[in-house]
Image (cartoon, rainbow, N blue to C red; front, side, top):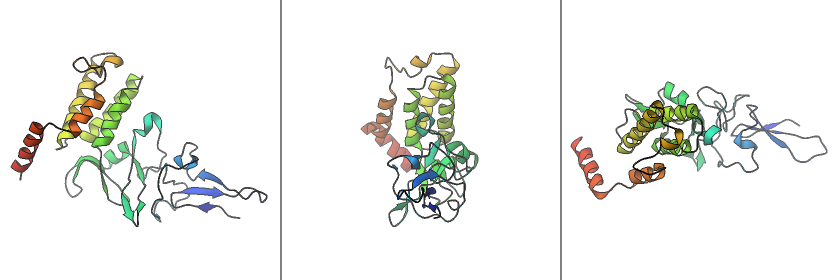
Length: 229
């Protein structure tokens, strides 16, 4: 009996003939692949006959740009998954390292025909994903990071995604990141870099303010948007 391969890149290997149940393994050989969990958290994905037919490529854990496995460190901050519905309710599901996407001009703010504004464009389906919420997630992750070097690495990813953006929310988050990075460079202890006006951790409140601007701020934003037309 030959092994079967699912659309997401998983292999179902047969057990000995006396066992009716097969074992699921990752095509890329990644023991931390999400496909190996008891309940795969991702819905069924569209069939891919380009990268997913390669013998060492797994859609659940292989970067579509460099083909290397993603890392789940710090809640998987370093990659993005395309969750666009492609056809008949099936998701794209391809993933990419954010650093790979930035180097390929498929993430961040990119002009020309691509036209990205703090977004990610999937190499497979060309769909765009807003990365501002992802950067907000990075900031929340940083509040529980004990390593200064790791925190700076995470913040740098967020900085590269947001710089040059025309979005108000992106610029506010960028200012927050720059403030935290400056404190780290000044030698401020990790426990204090998130303090703002007496608050120990204002990251969640900060994101809520961005998502729900005051009526005055919303009016100013609307006026600014109209004046650019």
